[in-house]
Image 1 (tube, rainbow, N blue to C red):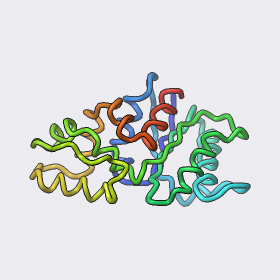
Image 2: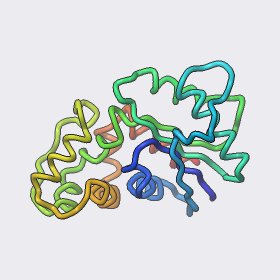
Image 3: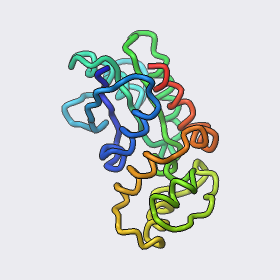
Image 4: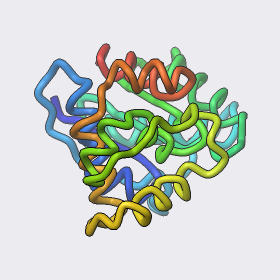
Amino acid sequence: MKVLLVSEGKHELTGSLETLVRRLSPRELEIHLADVHWNDIHTHRGKGQGFYKRAIRWLLEARKRGYDAVVLVIDEDGQAERIKDVANAQNYAGNEFPRALGVAIRTFDAWMLEDEQALTAALGCLIQRQPAPEDVKDPKQACKVLRDESEADISQTQMYVRIAELVELSLLEQRCPRGFAPFADRVRRL
């Protein structure tokens, strides 16, 4: 299955999101990456707001480019309307193109905070269970602090890829029920 994986952050687009999608999918995937904000992708005209239009445009673009499906993840970033926009695009009946659209509550970085065993293995030191990831005010900063305090000689991007390889997916669904759980279900159903 040829899949266009669309996201907005460098951490997502450098391996960690792709790793999670591959682990979630029951199918063999050929994945191509794209930044949700690419300038040559113009927002779909019609009803709906912001990310709804952008998600619909990516559905059309993926079909035009010969993909079998599109997987798209954006950050909520404290903007609750993004959750509604993406849910509406996921359920859009005007285009039956296969898709798995998701919103990471607050940010994708929150998904990296849920499994202390994966964090411990990735950072090479004991990491205690973190607060509920979707309630952390600045997940990116929380991840950076954990990495810096560990003295691990890896970038934050490398840390995320390693966590994505190790994270217990069912635990991630339990601890991120508003963002990761619905996204994981959509990926599995592609």
